Figure (cartoon, helix red, strand yellow):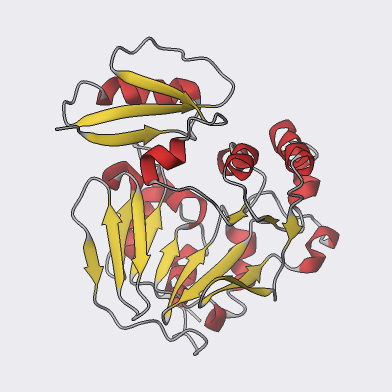
Length: 300
């Protein structure tokens, strides 16, 4: 019987190869490393290397995706935009969304600048979204953009790349998911001025599950049942602090323990989290009361 197929991609060829080196000794999985334009750096006997921009489709093989309608690029950091142009081309993306300060930060980031040029060349110029925008993502699915504001480029001092990341709430079936990119203190402080807008069932933890001085109040305002974090295997002090903040508030799923994490929302409001390396978890809490006032944040 063929084992599970594990995709290692989006983290650079060297580290992707090192992870594959540890995994390929297991008989229950097949390892695939997705490459950009680089060459493999480790000769691995049982690992398959494939090009992320080739017709030999990584996404199609691993998650059976044949088309991507919308790509949201929260901000211009490489670990958030690396293969965006290739995915947009191979999967005939209908649109790519960016925040109002994305282009300004991309001007000092060669990878992001080249990605913007590539999107223009394939006739998928990114559309800018900002606070106050609402748009459908699919049938009965709505996206509400909470950050950054349209006038963000005029701020002094200007927002960092992280704090200019798009924050948006995805709403479906009476449930909501809050996407936060890499926001830190400055953005969280501004968002906390409108805590009622932050309520969500699932929080994609800001900045890879790190914590800032505002994080405890931010998590309290969101009041999630589930927190999902994409992070490295070794947690930093800030990440461990988030663990303590979330401990009695929500179920925390980190990629270093769970692998890929899939959140499924049913039209009836059912919510299930499916960690690749663990058993699925059904979340029984009632759907969030999106739009209703949040409880006061600690110390407010």
